[in-house]
Length: 301
Image 1: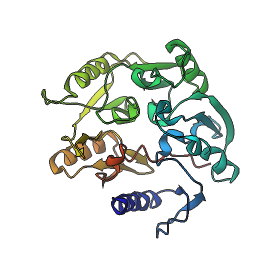
Image 2: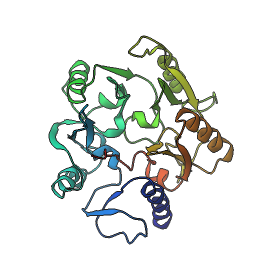
Image 3: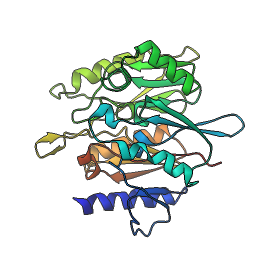
């Protein structure tokens, strides 16, 4: 199992390092042939998306590195080591910008999507879940998001959850923002699938959303991978957990040629001008995450 995961990470690292600098956080030198920087730091888990800095860049090109609290997705798992990584890589000079202490508020990078123009998308089942920011109310949480992320509004998605997901419904497994006011979302056409009803409700809610200009979003439905199981447990496989790079998009695939090809095509069309690269994520999904979950991007300054 470890060899399979290592092979997948090697492939992902190779594709990233072709296009932009790569920083790897690991407890020891990983001995890879890929060109990367290394920060030797112990961690609890592998999901950089959720404990990494959330970065804001202003009109002058200056960055603010927001260090939110990560508490293991609502105190489900140990997180003390992960929660210390941001400060370490900042002190080492591996990331540049103004450090902003937001550790009094729990927020995971996978739980939000931003269009960069004033709108934040999130899911109520995650941000309002127990053991995150209680006793704060929804209105108080929304106000905090708008303040810290310099946003004008928050659109809350009230439906959608993948079986096997430990995060309480991260948006990066369900709905992603693309150029030209496009939302890519996971759909389910199989009425016998346990996701069908909830994802249908999510689809209907997305149809009610409007852009800042008052126009409907362009909706693109991604296929739902056929059920994948590990030791009798269904895994949260999704094509929405893709990673956008400079000039490319890395898309998780699951050895389901017809659905993989459909997802690659739809994501490529939505992100026109970027090379679309499929990465077999059957090993990573056994850990209940995928490409977007285990990475976090930082701006070039």
